[in-house]
Amino acid sequence: MAMTPWATRFMELSDEVIEARTRFTPSPLRNLGAYPTYEAENLLWSTLNEIFLLTPRNLRAIRRILAEASVFSNRVYSDEKAFKRRLYNPIVEPLPAICLTGPAGVGKSALLRAISHLFVEAGQIDAGGGHMLPIRTLYYYKVNRGCRDAQILKAFIDSCEVFTLEEGGIVGVDQVALPQPKKVSSVTSALSLAQRLATRDGIAAVILDELQFLTQSTAANTAATATLMGMTFLGPPLVFASNYDMVHRLKQRGQQDRDRLLSRHIPLLPEMLAAPEDFRAWKAYLEECLVVSGGALAFDPRNDAEPLHCYTFGLRRKLLDLFRIAYRHARQQSRYTATMHDIEWAYCSGEYCEHRVDVEELISIQLGRPSKRKDLIFPFEMDVEETQIRLEEQKGRYVERITDQATAAALTPAEKRSYVAAGGTVKGAKGSGRKPSGEKRKKSPPLTLEALQEGGRKYYGHED
Image (cartoon, rainbow, N blue to C red):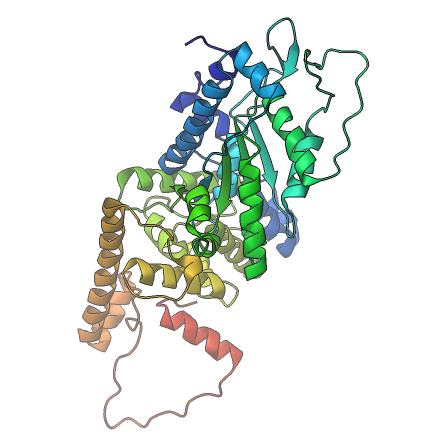
């Protein structure tokens, strides 16, 4: 098969090239302590949020998407004749969409944005006969609430330099006088024009992000389905990111919709520390957070990797919120570095409550317990090996926690104090044990907000 400019753009993408082009680490923060507390915590959060390190799980997802784009490009843009035939007579056979799914905060949007950095577009290519045309590999669009196929198509058309395309000649970007764009009066005419523009620009994949905002009701679910189905008629493979909740809603649709929208799915799941490559990726990310924080965070990435994973279920969004709350707590204590002590406090804080509820429910689901939280339940059948490793990992942690609690319960008050001094932090370990039978019971203090917060910290095994 002859190599066309549309096919060769995928050939140089080795794993090393993908890692180098997608990696982004912002400059370390400097003098964060000079900012007011609330401004500083949000600056820390936003800067850490820019970090993107390629992980084995990210790489597998990117490879799947690139494979779909490459096959489409080789088939549709195989030679000059095939290109012109599709340009002037765009008979499109819609392909099944590709659903990238994972729990909220796992990094789906960050991955899709990173893919756009893979291609250094040449700007123009010779499409044959001296016709110079633009080339773009991917089209990325972030969907807003209330957005529909008409708005997406219009945004795509606006992203192109639109020229009149007449039979018998290809109007390129090298002409001096550029014709005015055609007016789009309906979805049908917009789709027809968008199909030709997608071919002209050599688009190999269309990426839609944040589609969960379109499924807040039954009517919206129908509209979202129609929007996704409509975008498959643009021609190139459609990749859309979806949280679990949206996929569960789409699975309620008829077979024809599910076949088109869910038959090709790519899971993006959090790292599991029982897998060596996942542990290395998680540790590398924690190390990068330390560097970028510029001294605002202080912990041991190796020894503290497991508790940080337990507090967040390995979800980046929850981890960054944990760091933000912990740093504020340190500042309020007149310190400029948040340690694991502050992070443990943050986990038990009222502000982290919603995250904590999610994490504990995710752990419960992974242990095989029933749940009504469809937004946290993986909507497809998970691979047996992955399921087994995750189950064993959580069972191991659960048994360890129960064993520690049983050990602490069997100790005398003096032994408990020694146990805590040696580093024990399990529930009930830091206490004086049962009071002697002759000791008078003290009256309980009044119930206050501070007392509730203190009780929460004790419940989760951490003291301020």
